[in-house]
Image (cartoon, rainbow, N blue to C red; front, side):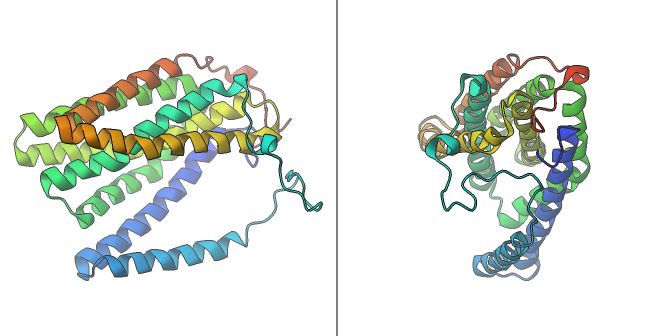
Length: 286
């Protein structure tokens, strides 16, 4: 956000997302190579991940300081205060609400969409890695496009579209396994899986929305941090309740609840102020 200086924020986040998709292609390629082609087990796969993490740690030391970066307490031996780490303002309540529902939506699809493929259709890690690789390859072009759509139409329109498409996916997940034969149902579920992986990238609209309403640049990181905490709290609690619902009523009930979450996302999105490109202020650079 700071590197964008308020210009083309969505497009820049889209480019970053595309690079992440490239990393996802590499990661899923490693899984497929180790488990499908070489016939190795999980030990070799996780060892490969450990090597990549070491490389990532080394690269992080090469990151330059951003000119004008404000680090409270730097050079004084004092860290940020609790107030500086967690910013709770009424101005940001809609952003925080979106973070909470996204946490619920994210965990349902990260946990139960793959589990439906594994438990109901006997799919394994190489097949899921292939599906993720397909979504990542598409994401190389789709994510910058999504970013441009955010810049052009605004967060309200994009998040609303995200919620409506998610509602359709939930309806598909809830019904397809019960009404179609095995092969066409499996094909459609993979289409849903790839589509949902791409929809996750639209979460950058929440970040660009925050960048428009932020009161000062010093509050950007702690506000995102508090939203991330809320996201994780929801992510830790949703699988337990949804898992009990799955056991009691079946997979359709979990995705029906996810459909309700999609409706909430649409309702919250409609409260975002309309996009006004000509009058948009460079809030972060102030």
